[in-house]
Length: 150
Ligand SMILES: [Cu+2]
Image: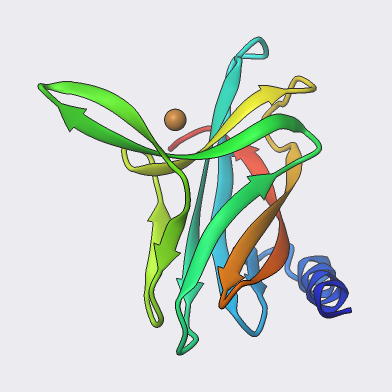
């Protein structure tokens, strides 16, 4: 029931915020600036970015992401090692109370693997994020538009 309420609020917000940057708010975390980097139609993976705000007084841990549109979604971080950019898999990501976690090019990103359909600019992809707090998993659904980087 709790999850259903969150999803419902999200749809209400998106329905009337065409002009604004899309922001998903629940009574736990809020998400903004979510987007997927446009890639060639045959790309085996795509990168997704977003900002997660945890304005609550309790820590949250991002534990999974999933989507019907991709075979799997992992959390990665790009790091520079010996002058080379490498991607490190992150099992889960802690978002301490009162802080934000930013996924951006050259840093944390959603590694969205195995797109099941060719995605083009302006397509929208629904994904579900799972957050853990004191052993309870909360799922939040968001949509990410496909964009070309500025
Ligand atoms: Cu990656």
